[in-house]
Length: 475
Ligand code: NAD
Image (cartoon, rainbow, N blue to C red; front, side):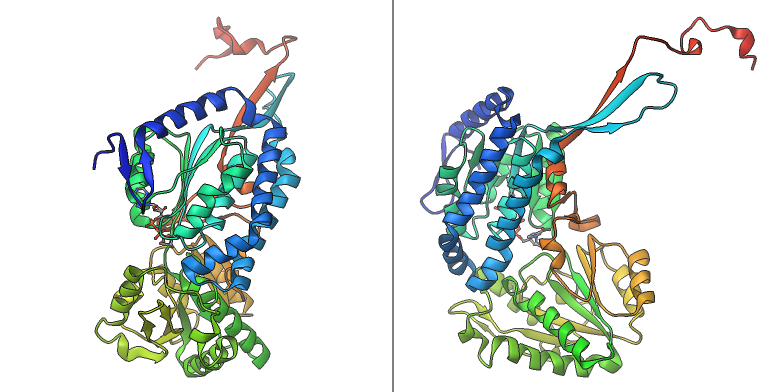
């Protein structure tokens, strides 16, 4: 596909390769002027972001309803509320994050001092996903702005109302010389990737992550890859009915109540001891009824599958041999409005695609093991997950999970909680990506930590400089 002068990509939107080239050159010049490094610029842009979220809250909630069928409380919890918190933290803290940090040099550098200075990287590209279209676009942008960069953001074309709101309304709140939003799909994404950037921050699939990484090779561009994977949840039998009920509620909301399982850190499957499995299935069935009612579709508390292609993908996962037979609850997808019932499977074949590919939908396989500790070996036999969850009060098991498994994050007795935290890094390891963000980690993701060392002329060690007195160093 050639980009020539003008390319139509999504809907009636047009993309001009020449205009992009011009914009990029102008943004580089703007960065060169030093404007975006000023604290006043950073503060005004962060406040612009905050005003955008505050003043357009209703529009944002409507867009999330239209694109993904998210209930407005869910949308507020996962996007509007979380974003307000992150922006406020950045406004309050970015000057502290910017401040140089003193460091010590070795004694051989007599009379010296050193510091670590955070400098912006320059012109950065952010490509985001559709499942949390505001959060996944603006969380990295907060970091890019706080660190003093100029930034281009490309939201996902699969959440078109949200993407359009970002592209048409957000610019009214920002300095458009330093921040641009470009709408488009894979072709525009690829076109952008081949420009020279000082950082690419990508959220999406491992397949496209590989394309991003190959493109970054051209200019040796540093990248952050926020990808997906299969996040397991170990569920111990837990001793009290209160603990069990609480665990089940948290599992259900993390799986079905956060974009209908279309989340990178959604619980992908559960590992449970055989002896507890039927009790767990019953608790889950009851829990689903309590949480989503007898008719979850009418309750409108479960988001919709993003599009027909994805609902067909989930259908084909369920239609594999022996997978359908393992359905113990739910299972139907309504083509008219892309609603899928919360669905539970018990022991589907481990070699089936539902157990080898990321599910990204409201289907929860439960896999039985003899002893809960066997879950460790099970997890370690798969690629490193973005998150591991374990619902257990067994301290030994908790310690073993921390030390014997590897994952982006590990959470005990809850799920998804790590996404809203600013104090711990959010990001992957292995095939679910690399790089970290949220809170100060977002600032660091878009900064170069420059080493600055200073010496006095007063004195130095004689043995540093030739000619050396060889009598003193006989080998
Ligand atoms: P995707 O990789 O298809 O698309 C992500 C973005 O890349 C979109 O903006 C898309 O337009 C763009 N894109 C697509 N093809 C491209 C190409 N060839 N060149 C350049 N850009 C291209 O992923 P998706 O469907 O949006 O998201 C689903 C995946 O993302 C899942 O695997 C999920 O786990 C992962 N994800 C990860 C996180 C995280 O924080 N780790 C968050 C959300 C989603």
